[in-house]
Image (cartoon, rainbow, N blue to C red; front, top):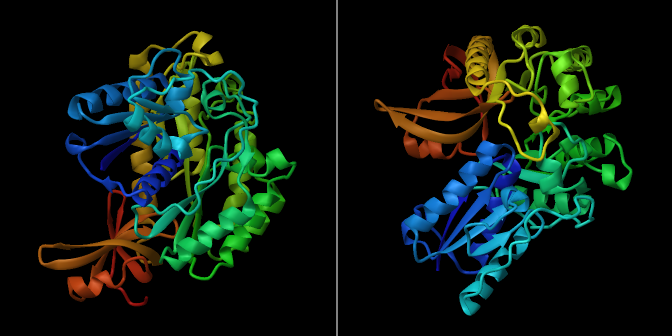
Length: 442
């Protein structure tokens, strides 16, 4: 039987899609790239905003039209928060995705729909961590490692604690076993991710150093050359943790710190538990330990009651903090959050502000990329291509700068460098892309 996957949302969702895809393969299913010929269609939904919810419902209806004979499956966050029926034959929430195959097989044999449980009755119930084992990503050079689920923060704009529940951490032995298995399969870079990464171990009474201990153990696994981290919470980054991180040679010099606004008054309405002065203190410590690091963030534009002056504070803060890229989101009302009851900023104003911030982000990203001209860089090769008769290797530097490398050799020779770290010198840049002189070391 043939199965098609469609994923919305974050890296954790992508990891879980990869896990379920792998389970289908092991059960004898064939994975296909177009839905029209599918026997089973799986849509991994997202509920982070009302727009994400709308897109999730839209994709389920679209898949039913494109694949009228297929079993339509919905899984993930949006199904948890749906207060009505889900347009799918089989429905899984955030805690029972590992049961999807058995539910599909039961549906096929019985022809009966699975009852949708709707909104979670108790977000504090201890469901435990749903273990998938080793998860291989379609990306050849890196793999995502999910180490925790859930969030305890309850920011006023966010529905995720209700959809995912409270923090639950994965057992360390299972994480390390997965990394070792991935290394044996040729994976050289792992990205550690979770819904709220800095809360790893919190449900066991541990502090942020339990995350460092895990990073340290992963760094000792033979075959792993790079470790990258998902989104970090600035309030959680203690001096002890940052000093320890600076000793890790395999750690990528790229940090994503979630900001959401550069205005203290907006941060307070968001219930973010820090102000801009505390954020700057953390970034200052990071720069002292990692001088050439890349710093990225998320920012919401047009949060309820945001004034033009407050948005101007955000623009000023983005420059002051020295971000080299900002992931920009116009605020989208999410029913069930405290922010939904606040006075709303008109959508056109939120989008206009988002456009201004995107322009600033593009400017800062170009400046950061250009700063690597003349510097020696290490690039993890993810792909090769031939353009105008010349062979190029492509990948990201330690600082997560996208790079194209001129290669003096054949396409067949270039393929030997895939999943390897190569060294070169920044020659020129165009936008956010760095061009690197021919490889001089592997």
